[in-house]
Amino acid sequence: MSDTPYDMIIKGGRVIDPALGFGKDAHVLIKDGAIAGIETDEAVFGDIGNATVLDATGKLVVPGLIDAHVHLREPGREDEETVITGCRAAAAGGFTAVCCMPNTSPVIDNQETVMFVQDRAEVADARVFVVGAITKGSQGKELSEIGDLVKVGAVAITDDGHWVENSEIMRRAMEYSKMFDIPVMDHAEETTLCAGGVVNESFESTRLGLTGRPAVGEEIAVLRDLALCRVTGARLHLQHLSSRRAVDAVRKAKAEGIRVTAEACPHHFILTDEAIAEEFNTSLRVNPPLRSADDREAIIEGLIDGTIDCIASDHAPHAEEEKDCEFDHAPPGMIGLETTLGLVKTFLIDKGYLTWADAVAKMTINPARIFNLPGGTLKQGLPADITIIDPDRVWTVDAKKFRSMSRNSPFVGWELTGQVYRTILNGRIVFEQDQ
Ligand code: DOR
Image 1 (tube, helix red, strand yellow):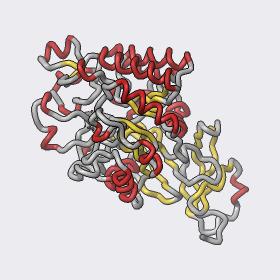
Image 2: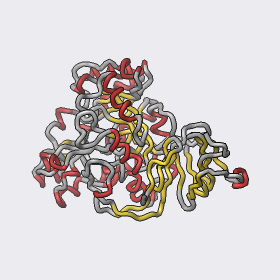
Image 3: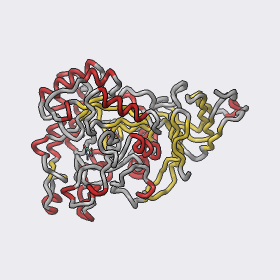
């Protein structure tokens, strides 16, 4: 505790807080790790004592970003990422909170593993909210003890990486999730159609001689799970939507009042499967796969009209030696925590698809509301989790600068506009650009 009125003043930036409907030049005041207020009038904090003053002139000051879909790989693959390094990457990307997926080794399907990750996260540079597995070992055969997972703080359940093929099990999972008011996150790719596929099923897959994962696999999975969501009244969160018909189905379901939300990842609103032939870069191998230009457009339309609520990275670190192989042998996934913000600015905001306020909402208050997380807003009294963005800074993605332990990004070498300037967690600066 200090005897000055505030510990930190973020001065002169444009404060954007969609939850508060606030978007003005203002000063953010921090005291004892919490937001003490947002002031437009400098006279109010005339005596700053020995508060740290962060000059945010020309910058955007927004609630700490939240990434609803991140793989931290601990326990089990600490050579690819750990809770600590993943959270360092999060901070460098402007994220103060992440939801981590349970496809670790062992799978996060029991209280001990949830608590293990939470324990690791205690000293990390971002908040970690653990998502538990729907089924034991994510094998799709037997439900996890969902109540136990929730009791120790799991914020959702998913078998991410796999679709729960058994409809009866998925129905029960939804019924339990409703009892605990958590969403079921859904990797919607119908197994029998998609098994063995490594790229979108299309003219491209035929031309390249690679096995396809058809968009209809996503559509079928989404339609079944929307139907189960309708009968159970549960909350369904569709992960990484990638195809037009899936987006259309979610739009219709929302209009009908079904409790569904959805996320999209930068690679699905920026890239198409045509990028693969250029150099067979294995960082482009991802599930669900990169699809057609029409699908990509549909994702953007879904983001614009609110069908898609969140932008998430699906940060999926993989070891270099495992990605350094033929395209169809590479494990699926790409890292994204450190590039998402720049990609959103360059490919959604600069192109006029989303305003800053819309984009920030999809990375703050929307995921906070869906997963019942604290934060996502700069409301007075809440922990001071804040991201300061340099909106016009042009930078080149440099693999050597990644805080993540892995390097599997297809965006390496790309020039982006918009970069994190400072990331603040609990009133503490956890990331400074150029430091
Ligand atoms: O591409 C992917 N990689 N999709 C997933 O669903 C899982 C993820 C991973 O864990 O690497």
